[in-house]
Image (cartoon, rainbow, N blue to C red; front, side, top):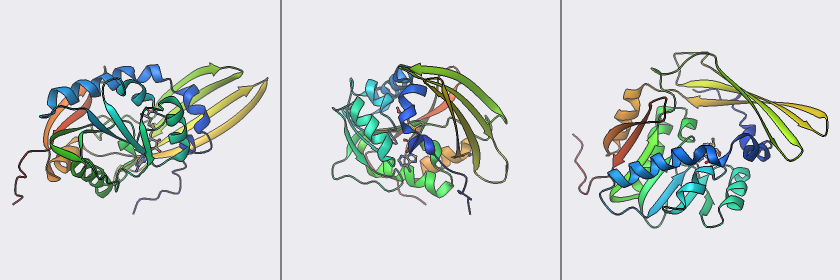
Length: 252
Ligand SMILES: C[S@@+](CC[C@H](N)C(=O)[O-])C[C@H]1O[C@@H](n2cnc3c(N)ncnc32)[C@H](O)[C@@H]1O
């Protein structure tokens, strides 16, 4: 049983107001274009209607909406509020990627830096099942594994400062896997928030899923997808373009 008592996720709750400061929508353009290209290249049907699982503050959608008609879900009302403000054209609704269902199927489904919140194999599989069920035959699901067991580095640390108006935030990030026998690792965030000469220090802890690359491929194929493995960004993160076949292949 995964112990989630340290999975605070304040970044998507009381600290969500910091998201547009520490995370810039401009930094998501390249990733959104990688999704656009993978969808266009691999879909076997024209791809116009896109479902985005785990849309966060809508920074990916800011670019995606130029190319697709976007419907997007997230479990955080605070992040959905930011997304709605940034992208009034997008149909946002609360929903969990492990269980969300829709009346109409989509041409394409995607999940970016939200799929890493699937902490167990059953959860990861459930998210893949949502994508499969919500797609038209010939449609494509695109996602990526930002961390895998093979790629994970202990004590990855990053630090930067961003400012907006009278607020400056120095953001420190650290990741660590305390137990290599389970399927999660920890990320710790420290926020040094300066406003009008006052310093406010906040901390946040998140759990993320950590699976071998083979587990991603096996679970995607198990739910019925035909999977092509791609790479994106300069770190060669494994990306998956997963087609829902026109005819279901009977499982032995
Ligand atoms: C890093 S943020 C995504 C940011 C986003 N790429 C953007 O463009 O702004 C990760 C998001 O995943 C969401 N999330 C985590 N678990 C989820 C789940 N089970 N279903 C839907 N969304 C989930 C969180 O609420 C959070 O908003």
